[in-house]
Image (cartoon, rainbow, N blue to C red; front, side, top):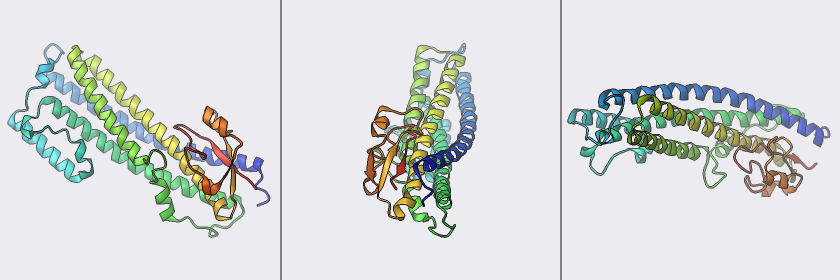
Length: 299
């Protein structure tokens, strides 16, 4: 342990975070491809609406409020029933009116958008859960190796990792809650953007471009912020655990790693706290979205 001095510790921190960021880039690249693929699907759906209900490349808003004919309604309801049987936890997102027999064309589009976002959210949840769990294990094991301990000195507790990854560490929400909160907002944004575009009399090219930009910009920003912030949470928890297990009781807040240091992190930089009192968002990173601060153990 004598080699773990502050200078060495900060050097190792940078290496751990560099490895984390490399894996984050892989994850983001994978999900952005998914977003681009789904944005293209949405574009085709919007094009079909203009083809079916438009005249001279414009749709009258009143034409979107026309109730679906019995055949269209039956197909839509069957699809809804099958989809929400598989995903009952998202039943509250079902765009159903008080009477299922009064579904209109706008309801149909909202359902398509909702279904698409739920499917994307399920993928996000799966890959982020795997990424965060792997990040914790990788950093924890690297810590033990750098401290000179063998691979079997302190094994990773799978139950602990699961608890940490799913912990509601800020505003009583965990990473999954944040994914679905983002999805609900995006569903509302896209549906409202479409409706308002039709009311304004936007043609297909203008409206489809606006929806694509909203879809991609919002989706990319949401997942980057979430992956970056949750990564900081997991990384610091993984780095703190070996010190806590070995009886170290004090850490020093370190904002040096964060090139975009916020006022709150700058104010905490250099302050000492007890590990038993550490609390993300209060005295332990992350303190805010996009935070990449860390800590130095007091030896």
